[in-house]
Length: 498
Image (cartoon, rainbow, N blue to C red; front, side, top):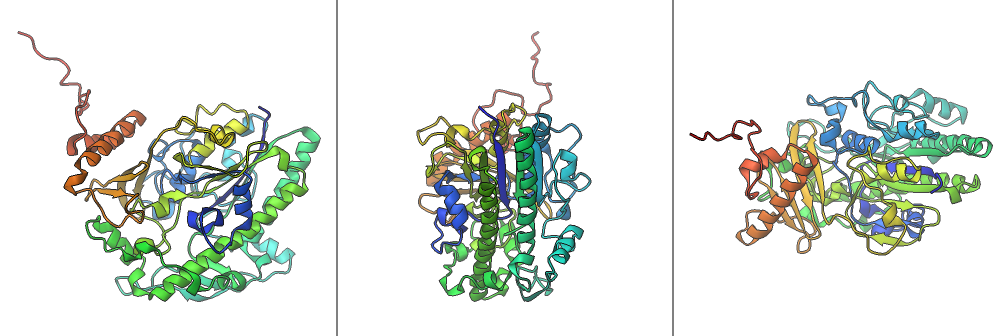
């Protein structure tokens, strides 16, 4: 196939249900909805891990977190490595080596010592997890356009268990839309696209361009027209706000206290959700500017467009905010849309796919061997047809900790979800009967056959991948007979024959 240009639109901490294409009734995302209507929407798109740096490192490398070993955000690092090792395969360097221009505008967050430029990306170095509103390039943009600097009011936060002020969750931004960091990012992306378009015309050079917004990650800080866009009275509370944490790992209740959910009235929760939806609408508006520029530059017929995020966001679901050691759909199932010129539009797929699969897809679009992206699988067979495609019928996700080490593994099938928590109780949810994951059925006697079957399936998948988490499962759970020495000593291999 011919080498495609690739535009990757990425957000941070983005719930699937904020998009009209995924069921939001308020029509806040017309540009992303149009992308879904003219491309392929994936209804079971999962992150390999619901935390920024490890998820983004998986996208960059095509490797699961346990393999690339960049397991935590550096801001809350608890002893893990903070940068990918030398010699690590990345799709960006592979594209560069094959003649691509390669740019990243926006959030990087894949290391501390190494920047996006070290991996072959053009674009300003924008470090950190939130909008770096004091960055020199952003300040220069504001000065050039005579726009006011960042200033906020109407802060929303709860109270921590120790009596201190909770994390900032939302605030009103006193800037016009043109001054927002989101508008700045879209403007810089358009400028780089214009440069790449000229290079494509003059030298036939293809490009990869990623526009990675820092939002709608909390705190939701947006200007008046988006902070007040959604009436909180129109916002339904998530049904899992009824969470009691009965029969759940105690860490979940602790996380709820850390995020101060019960110190704020439900009206505040509605306002937070409304502000979050407004933030999504602002980002959709800026995405529309970039897609318009792509069409204006005559690139639409030669450019594949992918949209996704690193992971989801709780926004009150399960009485939680942000993300953390709880493997609920709210933070593991995310939006994922792919549009390839010439492929059918309006396609909806329900296969289990992953953010990891973007890596092989990008390489496939570029005509570059995707084999080094060892945990990734190209989505092009699913995009090119609406017919059934042979695909794995379940998916594995992992977590390694945030604020403190906390290993978890998850198996998601069509009906069930199994979560293994070595320090605590395991979880089993029947998503057909309980889509909000309120009832942990792991200890229920009638679930014994399902529990055993899923434990064995997860065990086999982890062992096949080389994820050593399976060692714990060998001795602790009913995983059936094993065909190896679980001690890994080799001392059991020979039997004395007198």
